[in-house]
Image (cartoon, rainbow, N blue to C red):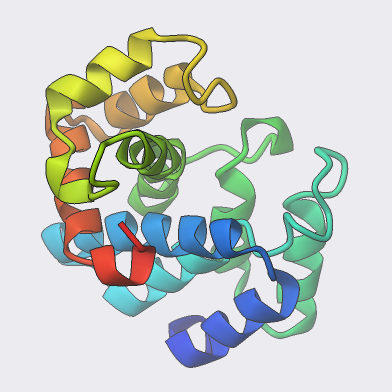
Length: 186
């Protein structure tokens, strides 16, 4: 039942991740995925913990050869179920793990977008997610020099995979992050 125990998963995240920005990314993705779990009437704790741990190995194993494969090994050794591990693996295209479940599609859809929304927030004068609007996010998406490490294609593909209009997806994730802005520092 570890996959449903947030404290256990959060401690695991912090054991492998020391960077404040990577921790906040995990919490931002978790905020968005949790909100979708509630919307879809799914297992909120399970979904949240998958989001929380999707990049937990990245700081120690940042290469495409290692991340998220090392994390999958660690989770397996700790007794996490195979479907949880497959969800973690599916968030990166290069793993070859197809996104078939609604959780896998949601995690993918929220990962890059949460990072992008954080970047957009940081350039606002107040640095508050409360000032971020869909229009400004879409404008920044067109600026290839802004947050250039974030894949705009993945943001668009993620919304499509969920069957959600891009504007609605962006607004939904903005609201989810607003609901957790104190933890996210936004």
